[in-house]
Amino acid sequence: MDHQEAAESLVLVRPRREAEREWLSFLTRLARRRTALFGLVVVVVVMLVALFAPWFSPFDPLEQEITQRLRAPGWQDASGRVHVLGTDHLGRDILARIIHGSRIALVVGFAAVAISGVLGMAIGLVSGYFGGRIDDLFMRLADIQLAFPFILLAIAVIGVLGPSLQNIIIVIGVSSWVVYARVVRGEVLSLREREFVQAAVALGSQDWRVLLRHVLPSAFTPWLVVATLDMARVIVVESALSFLGLGVQPPTPTWGGMLADGRVYLSTAWWLATFPGLAILVTVLGINLLGDGLRDTLDPRLKL
Figure 1 (cartoon, rainbow, N blue to C red):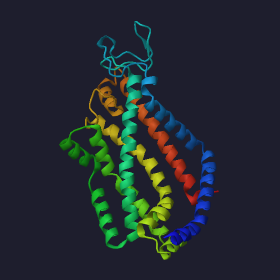
Figure 2: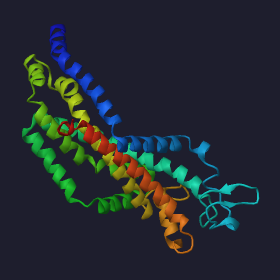
Figure 3: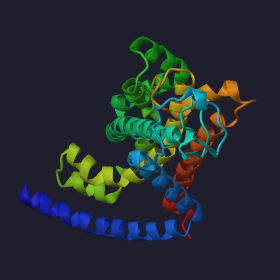
Figure 4: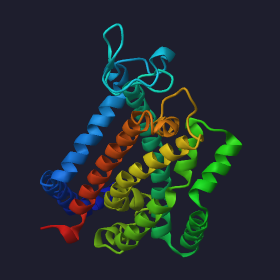
């Protein structure tokens, strides 16, 4: 076993050194893309706001004051406190609810992407490496998964299990593995024919060892790009489900729920729906710009 590990380490010396140079080159190229840096700044700011929401929030997001309902942005109450983005139909501060609503959006985004990403990665690795009947089985399951409209599936599952944060994460996570599996599978089909993988197999390495030590690190890059772009989609899906009343239930603030509350006041209190919509827009835009930057930077055909 010691001789095998020594031989494998010799085989991996060159790929590891190349990987280190690739990452250094990747960071240099990414720093040159201003849109990607802007997206990174937006994502970092949203994450910090969500993480330290009680510090950034000027008011309690659940505090109601009917006498202060539907106040315009910039309104100042009797105690001198300013509602920068105004108040909603129950007198709650819009800015405070947007700040705390970012927590729900990011929790669902990270958790659902983690579930679907890990599941898709595992299926893609096994399907692409072993091929044959295993590959046919997983790919047919993927076709069946794609045949179901996601919204109808989510409505049916949440209608049975009930709307909650955990159920939303499970529904979105379990139903989004197909993209990851197909991307990773395509990468593995190419990697398993590479010299360093063939050398590891020739040295007698077990299949799980080849997958984890040789194939997985190389297949991680396209997976990361897909995960970044998919997180923006998950946030939009969570907002849509909350808008339909299938997400986290009131009084917990969510961006989709705030849109649903404000849609009936568009003509009289435009800020109720405008500012939560802008929060979704800016967050999703930042994630998409970061994902596009990662894709363009990591794509060898676009390297200059």
